[in-house]
Image 1 (cartoon, rainbow, N blue to C red):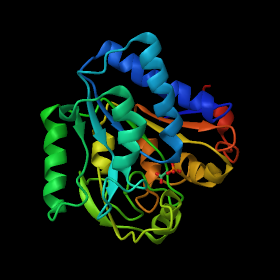
Image 2 (image 1 turned 135 degrees about the vertical axis):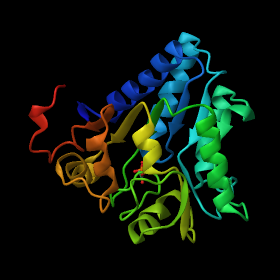
Image 3 (image 1 turned 180 degrees about the vertical axis):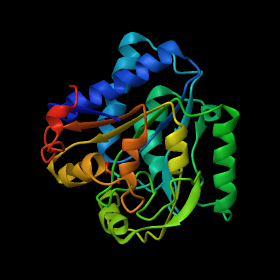
Length: 248
Ligand code: PGA
């Protein structure tokens, strides 16, 4: 694992967007997995700007959505679908064949998991995975206690996720289950960027980077990834004891 510390959210997001651009320039048919949420929103916006300025062709790459709230329709602005549609797919004019998202309204969510896994396996592995970290250490909806060996799966949401998740929904939402890529996908991915900004993420970043590697705190799995980067801004990195031990 590599720790990278940035001045602020903008600098961090700019680097993450540049990682996508560089990958696609080298590998036009790259498989990219992205999270939704507050953290990666700026990465998406900067990516759009860079793609337009540098005229990068994204038409051959495959896009994988990390997770979705079970039972929440794509028209709901708190859904991950809605985020991707508005922050990425429409501005970048992605074709539907390029996109793989979980259908969280499906009557058979297990089948959705199999479909997602097949879509990834058919293309090999994920080249670049960009994720956030939850206030309970989750990645996607890999909640505390999850197996490190799962591929896509349906999971009962942790209390923290249900409470914190209300921030995405005007007027609130009933959140019970999530459908998510598993941590085995993360371990298989060629490169993983975990982004975190703001003082509210300082404690979880400390546990992820300096704590014990345990499924009680899923983001600690980053410590085991040879090409995993934890990218934190100054505030999110502020509680790290060993921050100076890591190369800038
Ligand atoms: P956030 O979500 O980017 O909105 O903070 C992170 C997460 O729960 O994974």
